Image (tube, rainbow, N blue to C red; front, side, top):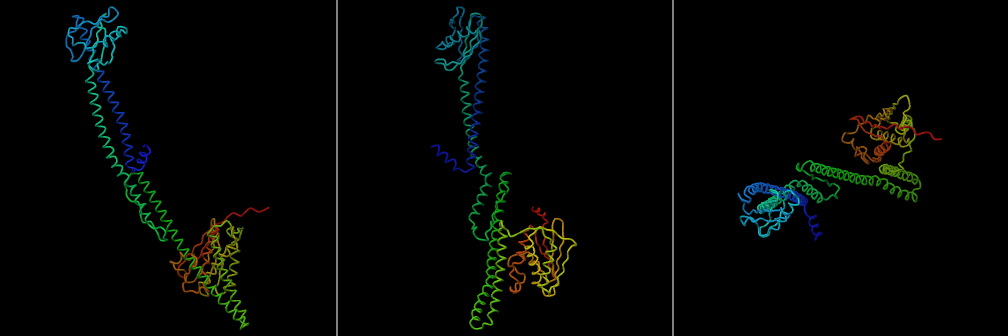
Length: 485
């Protein structure tokens, strides 16, 4: 039974449970207040009755002293008895009026005997046979004479019963109103929580498996107080975080699809070339031996091109995965000397592009992997040569700035449109969509350069407008490693 009630209680809504808890607490408060009021009223009326008994006995004492008997004003249903205690035990005097005594006077006699022994006024509450509950008071009115008076407590008991009845009815109505209206107020106060639950159910009904899935729902409203507003803000913040995460995931999936498609396209061209030159080599080996070496050289060139592409893809994958064995071998490097080497190689490979190198008088020391930074410089210079017409001037500037070293590679070519600058570092992205891939590269050079610079803790950015393109590489200056033994 208790388990069933507990299960029913747990199945109730929060507003109902709070209302019932408030009702139970109010019931305890009402019981304490009612008990205190009833006890106070009973004690107050009993004290008043004791005062009336004392005043009545004073008047009766005067009558006994003056006339030797009880006379004067008498109260309805009151009893009085006079005892002679000169002999050591109480002897009842016959009253003038028989109604002054109850049917059984044993309680009166016992109280008179106790008063004789105590020599002070005594008060008791007794149930008199055939009369009801009475308040008895015994006092010595003169030497050897004890007066015992009794006043009915029926009116006090009736008053207390009426008070209890009024309290029960009043408290019951108040408790019922508290539970009913309290439940309505609680439901209204908890409505923002229900709205948030509805929002959560609405979100659960959305299909979040799609790549473009978003969370358009938010918990609205301004009701509920500071606590509910704090919960609503946290709830909406969580939804914003989930929505942003879904957007990032969707963008990552789109980039992955685009990357796979571009990689497949880039690999398809050299593979088809390898297959075609292999067939030509086979035909030349049987029919035209003089052409065999030329086809073999082209076959090796396409295989090398495909190998470079795969090496770049592998390097990007390892840098993106942040492997422990990231291919960086850091050492103290003079960036000026590294730029000079890259410039010499560029002049030898691209004689149609004049190159200017600008550097300070002293070395620019940074802690880098010289092979990887040289790869970055080669990619930037090659990018300037490939995407500009012959005769375009190219310049390289090396300088030290506070806390870092900068290398700026600029050209005076057609420049990069503003809408393409944000994507020039994406993999397989090409500004000139019509350019041949044999001449324009695979679109991984700038992506590899950015990944390598980020791996060094630096950054790379592109600026410039029409007629100029400037790539700036900023590398942090690290402290040199301690010398070995």
